[in-house]
Image (cartoon, rainbow, N blue to C red; front, side, top):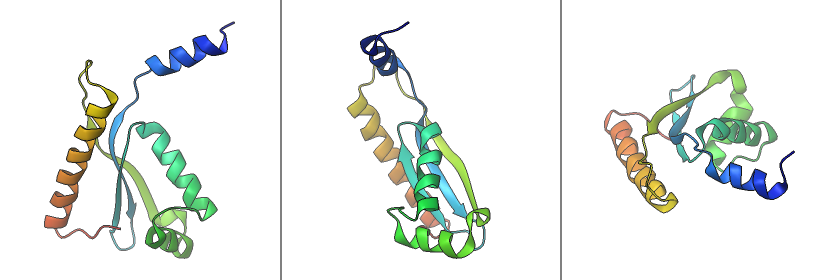
Length: 114
C-alpha cells in the first residue's frame, strides 16, 4: 500500500493531455473556447458548473439553462504536443499563444464566440 507522500509524488509525475477544448451550442453554432492542462478533467468540470448554474461565462450559462444540455457538444479542439523538458510555465505560455491563434482563426471564419 502506498503512502500519501508516494501517491502525491506519483500524481506529480503523471502527464496530462494539454490543449484547447470547446463547448458548441448546436442551436446557434456559438462556441465557448477554453484551455486546460488536463483536457480529460476539463469537460467534467465545465459540465458540472453548467449543471449547477455556476459557470463563469454567464452568456453560456444562460443558453444552457434555456436550451438544455442536449443542445451542446463538448469536444477537444486541439491538443498541444509538449516537449518532455518543458516546464509547467513554458507549457502554459505556449498554450496561451496557441489559444489566441485559434481564437483569431475562428473569428476570421465568422464564428461567434462566447
